[in-house]
Amino acid sequence: MKINPHPTYYLLTSGRIKHKKTMIWIEDFISLLYPKICAACGNSLWSHEKIICTSCDFYLPKTNFHKLQENPISQLFWGREQIHSAAAYLFFNKGSRVQQLIHQLKYRGRKDIGVFLGNLYGTCLQQSESFNDIELIIPVPLHKKKLMKRGYNQSDQFGLGLSATMKIPMNNQVLIRSRETETQTKKARFKRWENVDNIFMVKNFQHLTGKKILLVDDVITTGATLESCIHALSEIPEVRISIAAIAVALH
Image (cartoon, rainbow, N blue to C red; front, side, top):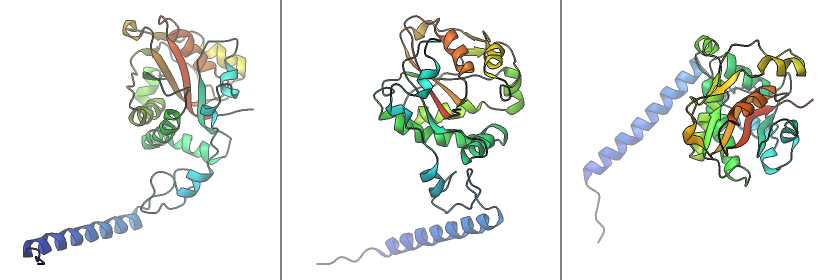
């Protein structure tokens, strides 16, 4: 015997459908006034796309270094500081879509880009034997003056994305930048190292003895800043340090 649904069922179902259609119309209208654009290429995003378009997601130059224990990033630190693993999500080149992403993250207030890329790369790192046992994420810190001026730390945002996907806590209070430095952008390799030598310190790290730490940054160039961070973190007894970044610039 077939039982017809109660009339209230039809009313509720019809109401939900109308509400959903109304929301879609509102979103479409808003998108006409304030179109959502891809943070990498600037083209309009479809309703199902977030932050970057499907094409950029496919064609962004991914390094896949998390699959290789010995790679160009880990080689940067050979004979300099001891690390367990090192990787970056993307290759960085001037004038590229990756540079556009980094620029908007750092200078245009687009914190969501850092979290989004952290989410994506966290999925990759979870599948890597070199990174799947990380216990704590620590971002490269900004000096408090630059943090106040910018309003946020781009490495924090990347770390938050990694933390959410990998289900690993992040701590941005252990590693401290003790003095303000000039920008590294136009400095030669030795000048970069000289600029950041001994500018980081660790505090309240007693509970981190023996921890497997993932140190995260936005872009790796010469590795000078990360080297200085690693040197400071190495004060933690029996610590194991790995590195992950949004992008790496190889020359």
